[in-house]
Image (tube, rainbow, N blue to C red; front, side, top):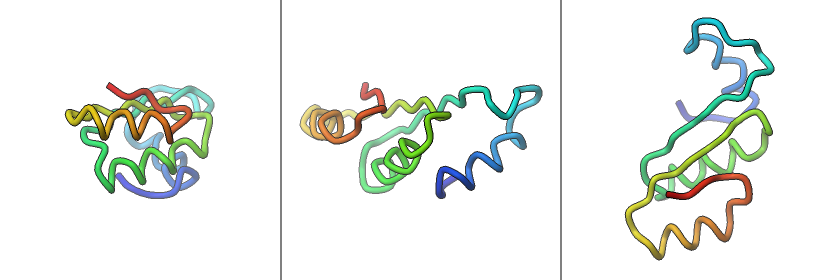
Length: 74
């Protein structure tokens, strides 16, 4: 899914069986290219999302880590 954090929060209950609306949502993004980066930026707008990006390019990974404050880069 791709969209604003508020919209994703509204859809999140559809993808889980029995979590409360206040529970943390874990998101994994494969690739820190344009779409992955944009999605991580949107998710950082909500403290509800715990985001990780798997990026194979070390230079891109270092850049993303310097820009994204609440996203874990692997």
